[in-house]
Image (cartoon, rainbow, N blue to C red; front, side):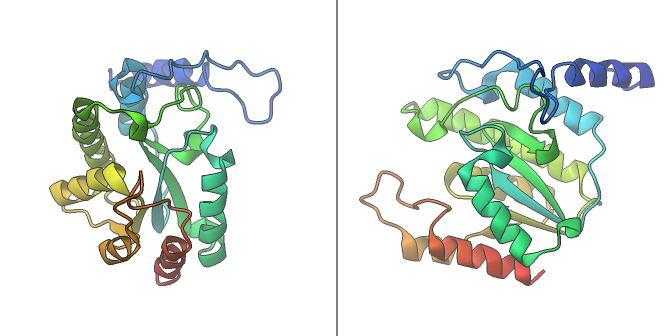
Amino acid sequence: MQSSTAGTDDKTRSFSSQTPTRGASNAPIPPAIATGTPPFFKPEFEEAYQYILRHYQVPEREVAVFLPCSVHKPYSTSPSHRLFDRVISSNLPEERVHRVVFGTCGVVPRELELMYPYASYRYMLGRSPDPAVHRSFLRIETVRLEGYLRKTEGTYRHRVAYCLGEFREAMRAASARTGIPVTLVPSDETIAACRDPAARFPDGSLSREEYLEEFAAVLRGL
């Protein structure tokens, strides 16, 4: 990718021409990406990530809140993100917060949620039975988070990641590699106290009351 102004303008036009306009009923919607193929293997996700990393000007905010990507798109309209937004808005003024989505999508500021290909895929990592896919996700996502943390090192004062499982592992690894602190919520202690080894997802859901209460408490303390 070129770093010249012309290259930047071309890349911006390339992405914006594929980006639906919020609220426009006749906006072009890219074809859905195949459900069964992990998005983190797809070149369009790497291209979008590189655009964000190299060219997108991330807004300066005091607090970055990293939220896991959702099956429902756009992310902000999903039941999980609506729930997370209520917690965030109840505990921090909006002007202090920047929401960033991460996970199988890579890492994307949520204001870009309609940019191709972020609104055009459907995938759940937890349903993959292949250990190699999970190892690949952790490797790729750690690198992408590491790049974003380095890019925004001077952009935020605080970073909070509300996450479980492999998303959490990737964020923890990226924070360790960069030396840039990220507060992981819920805490390891809370997860351990709530864990059900017999459940399909032993750590449960981020909609769990105990997790949400801790999320709110951490945000209030910032």
